[in-house]
Length: 238
Image (cartoon, rainbow, N blue to C red; front, top):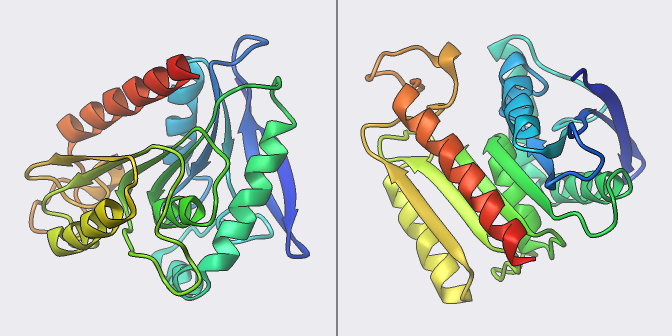
């Protein structure tokens, strides 16, 4: 199914994502997919197509605003730095995206956020800022503990899928995040894949285990299965 443009506004700025609708009139769920640094890339569209095959309607969000999608690594540094330096701004944009998606699906459809890499940071921050969704999923995320102005409490259940060899979000960061989640009493499950690096879901990351980014086919398949199981479990509980 072809994607269509999906626009929303936050703090006076226009964001331009894309939407793929579920194959049935009543979707199993609605998912805001927050992509990695490349935005609405072939990989993000592949993830979205998989979710549609599960029966979901999916919006690929616009991470940076104005529909900008980097095509070169040298373009992304300042954009991701802006996301990290203005984390509340990212949550405001995601909130606008979620509310716009709710208007596109039947009332009562379970709504989820699924974030990859930098998109995962935004998704978790949204949870800390009072997210009104049925679940939050992070996969190979840029993990960060809460900053000033964010509560540690997250209402919806959270699934976090990470590699033990991730150099972007190493095990020390995961340990700090676990401490934060436990102290807040959040419903969070962590799934760790051994011998797995950052961007393990991305075939374009290559296969060099000494590199900062590295694709892991087995972990990628496992993560998709875990995501599908989490969606099914939470939808059944609603």
